[in-house]
Image 1 (tube, rainbow, N blue to C red):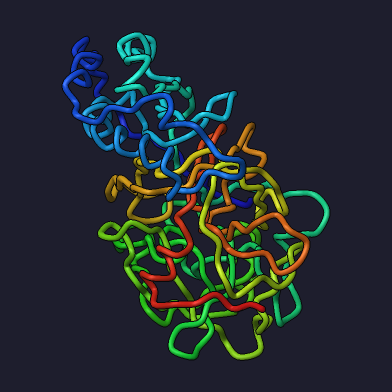
Image 2 (cartoon, rainbow, N blue to C red):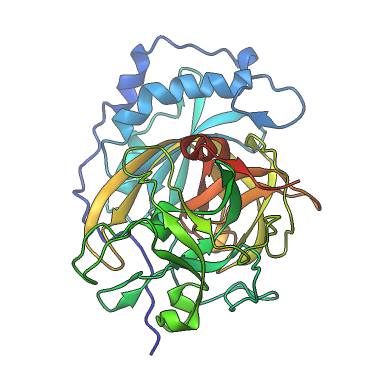
Length: 377
C-alpha cells in the first residue's frame, strides 16, 4: 500500500495570554503617518511604493513583540477593501486564546490600520496522494521532461513514509543547468535515524517523486543529481538545486501548462495576477495579497521525522490560497510567475502556506543566494 506523508505542524504551543499592554506598546513609537501620506496612485503596489514603505516602517516596530506570542503567526503589508495599505496580522484560528489576542491588538498603529487574518498554521508543502485535473503532473514523463512536475530526492523514505514535492523550474549556475526546488524537497534529511542516510551532493533527483510511485524508486527516473546548498536554517530562502542529467530535462526550461518562461524576473506587487504549475494542484491561478511578510515555519529532520528547527522568514510574498486551491501539499518547489500567456516572468519560489494563504520566497533573493539566473527567453 502506498504510504505518503502530509507535513503539518505537530509542535505543541505554549499558550500564553497576550498582555493587554500590546496596545499600549505602540503609543510611543516615533513613526507617524498622516492619511495624506497613504494616498495611492493608480496601479499596483510594490515594495518601493511610499505607502507600502510607510506601513513597513510601522511593521518593523511591532512584529517581533507580537510574534513572541504563539497565537501570532506573522505579519505582512496588505490592503483593505478600499485599496489602502494596512498591516495584516495572521492569527492562529485554532489557538485557544485567539480571541484574547484579537481583542488586545490595537486597531491602528500610528495611523496605520491593523487588519486581523485568521488562518491555520503555515507549513511547508510536501507530499499528499492527490493530484490536479487535466494534464498529469504526477505521471512518469518521456525525457526530456517538462518541469512543474512531481519529483524529489530519491532516498526520501523514512519512518514508514515517503516524501516528495515539485521540480519547479530550470536555472543556470556557472554555465550548467539545474532544477530548482525547495530545501525541504531535496535536502532536508539531515539525520540517519529513519533510513540510515542523509541527503548528500550527488544523490539522484527523480521524476516523479516517491509519493507517486508507491515509494518504490524503481518506478521513477533520475533527471538530476543533488547539489547541496544548505540554504536553511541560515539564509532567508528555502531552496535547493539538482544538476541536470544530460538529455533528461527540456533545455528551454519549459513548465507543464505554462511553457517556456522569460529569463528576466519581476518584483512582487499587491494585486499582481500570478500562476504556478505544481505536482498536486497542477496549473492554478491567484493574486498577490501581501508583501514583506514575516512568518515562521517548522521543519523536520527527515521524512516523517522529528523537529529540526523553526525558521522565521522575512520579506516574503503572500498569495491568496482560499481552500488550498492555489497551493497544497506536494506543490512545494513550484515557480510562481506572472499570469500572462507567453514567456511569463518569475516572481517567487513557493514553499509554504495555509488553507488561506500561500508563501513564496522572492525569486531574486533565491537567485542571489544560488548565484543563478533563470533559463528562459
